[in-house]
Length: 293
Image (cartoon, rainbow, N blue to C red; front, side, top):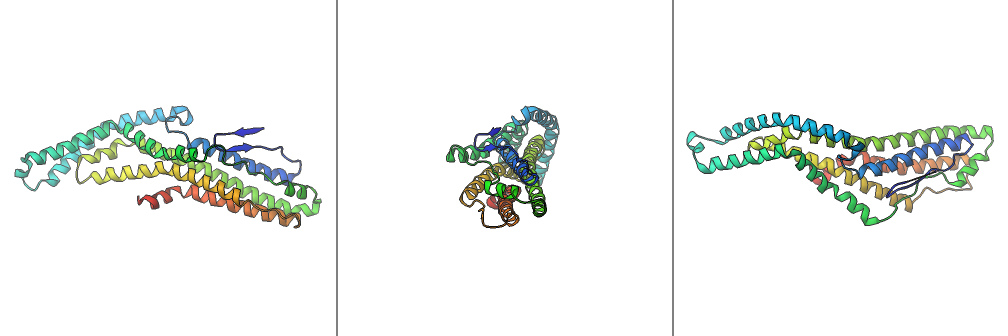
């Protein structure tokens, strides 16, 4: 059976009858499956995620919060006007009134068109993902599989000698499985953050109505841009991981005992996976450091 996606080719091999080999191959199968799912998710939009059902709920919440956003808009506008006016005479100046009413009109448009604004920001930031993928073209990686040398060495080991291999395979498969779920949970968490920002957008966007409260709206927009750019960082991390893995795949020394060979290979493999998991998990921190958010 084979699993294919646009930029990641995943192959699921026949599981060996040996318990140690099958345990490691099951763990690697989980890693390949979650990595393929990551590629599929990262190229989706919030509107198409899970068939669009979640997006329809977010649209309803956003529409419901617009009424509260308008109330906050009036409040922030009044705070801005009276906070900026040093005297009643200044309130009568045409340029003073014009400046604040332009700010009020812009904030009203931001609240009423919040969904369009958030979608536009996502599309602009999300354009980095297809650009990066189109730049490499074709498939970028094959699935991580257990080398035949290790499989043969493990299958030739007797029962007593295979006991240490059970421990190696248990620890290795545990680490690989945990890192697999960390990868996919990070991507799912990014989608939930996108939905949360979009749902409550009328409230922080209303702060643009007041000169003194506009920092809230600016911080909200900057934070949302950071969440959108996390997708680009995750894609670039996967591409770098693929190039790193292709150029420095774990070596297999056939002269070593089976236990030592398996332990050395799994250790190198887990190190490579930790590099990718760390980059994906820390995508939000990397974005903040890059853009000073």
